[in-house]
Image (tube, rainbow, N blue to C red):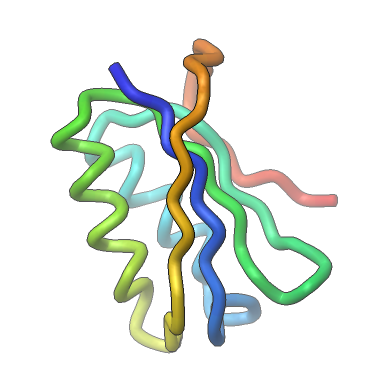
Amino acid sequence: MVNKQLTITGKVQGVYYRASAADEAQRLGLKGEVWNNPDGSVGLIAEGEEDKVSALIAWCGKGPVRAAVKHIVVNEGEIKGYKNFSVKRF
Protein backbone atom coordinates (compact mmCIF):
# COMPACT_ATOMS: atom_id res chain seq x y z
CA MET A 1 0.00 0.00 0.00
CA VAL A 2 1.33 3.43 -0.98
CA ASN A 3 0.16 7.02 -0.60
CA LYS A 4 1.07 9.44 -3.39
CA GLN A 5 0.34 13.15 -3.32
CA LEU A 6 0.13 14.86 -6.71
CA THR A 7 -0.02 18.43 -7.92
CA ILE A 8 -1.10 18.65 -11.56
CA THR A 9 -0.59 21.88 -13.53
CA GLY A 10 -1.72 23.08 -16.94
CA LYS A 11 -5.26 23.45 -18.23
CA VAL A 12 -6.76 21.24 -15.53
CA GLN A 13 -9.63 23.30 -14.12
CA GLY A 14 -12.95 23.72 -15.90
CA VAL A 15 -12.33 20.58 -17.99
CA TYR A 16 -13.89 17.93 -15.69
CA TYR A 17 -10.44 16.87 -14.49
CA ARG A 18 -11.49 16.17 -10.89
CA ALA A 19 -14.56 14.13 -11.82
CA SER A 20 -12.65 12.18 -14.47
CA ALA A 21 -9.73 11.51 -12.10
CA ALA A 22 -12.15 10.29 -9.43
CA ASP A 23 -13.82 7.96 -11.95
CA GLU A 24 -10.43 6.54 -12.98
CA ALA A 25 -9.29 6.14 -9.35
CA GLN A 26 -12.51 4.32 -8.47
CA ARG A 27 -12.15 2.10 -11.54
CA LEU A 28 -8.67 1.17 -10.28
CA GLY A 29 -9.96 0.50 -6.74
CA LEU A 30 -8.03 3.39 -5.17
CA LYS A 31 -8.94 5.57 -2.19
CA GLY A 32 -8.16 9.26 -1.65
CA GLU A 33 -9.35 12.65 -2.82
CA VAL A 34 -8.96 15.26 -5.54
CA TRP A 35 -9.48 19.04 -5.38
CA ASN A 36 -8.86 22.33 -7.19
CA ASN A 37 -6.14 24.61 -5.80
CA PRO A 38 -6.46 28.43 -5.83
CA ASP A 39 -3.42 28.69 -8.16
CA GLY A 40 -5.24 26.80 -10.95
CA SER A 41 -3.61 23.43 -10.30
CA VAL A 42 -5.31 20.25 -9.13
CA GLY A 43 -4.27 18.36 -6.00
CA LEU A 44 -4.78 14.62 -5.66
CA ILE A 45 -3.99 12.02 -3.01
CA ALA A 46 -4.21 8.35 -3.98
CA GLU A 47 -3.82 5.30 -1.74
CA GLY A 48 -3.70 1.70 -2.84
CA GLU A 49 -1.54 -0.93 -4.48
CA GLU A 50 1.59 0.57 -6.03
CA ASP A 51 0.85 -0.64 -9.57
CA LYS A 52 -2.68 0.79 -9.46
CA VAL A 53 -1.44 4.14 -8.11
CA SER A 54 1.20 4.19 -10.86
CA ALA A 55 -1.55 3.60 -13.43
CA LEU A 56 -3.51 6.56 -12.04
CA ILE A 57 -0.40 8.77 -12.16
CA ALA A 58 0.07 7.81 -15.83
CA TRP A 59 -3.60 8.67 -16.50
CA CYS A 60 -3.14 12.02 -14.70
CA GLY A 61 -0.39 12.88 -17.19
CA LYS A 62 -3.03 12.92 -19.92
CA GLY A 63 -6.25 13.66 -18.06
CA PRO A 64 -9.63 14.00 -19.75
CA VAL A 65 -9.95 15.04 -23.40
CA ARG A 66 -10.26 18.80 -22.75
CA ALA A 67 -7.29 18.94 -20.33
CA ALA A 68 -3.75 20.00 -21.26
CA VAL A 69 -1.45 18.74 -18.50
CA LYS A 70 1.90 20.53 -18.34
CA HIS A 71 3.53 19.02 -15.25
CA ILE A 72 2.91 16.63 -12.36
CA VAL A 73 4.75 16.73 -9.04
CA VAL A 74 4.52 13.42 -7.15
CA ASN A 75 5.42 13.10 -3.47
CA GLU A 76 5.28 10.12 -1.13
CA GLY A 77 2.86 10.52 1.77
CA GLU A 78 1.84 8.60 4.87
CA ILE A 79 -1.08 6.17 4.65
CA LYS A 80 -4.20 7.89 5.96
CA GLY A 81 -6.72 5.09 5.50
CA TYR A 82 -9.22 6.79 3.20
CA LYS A 83 -12.51 4.89 2.93
CA ASN A 84 -13.33 5.94 -0.65
CA PHE A 85 -12.22 8.32 -3.40
CA SER A 86 -13.92 11.71 -3.24
CA VAL A 87 -14.00 15.03 -5.05
CA LYS A 88 -13.48 17.89 -2.59
CA ARG A 89 -15.11 21.23 -3.25
CA PHE A 90 -14.14 24.33 -1.30
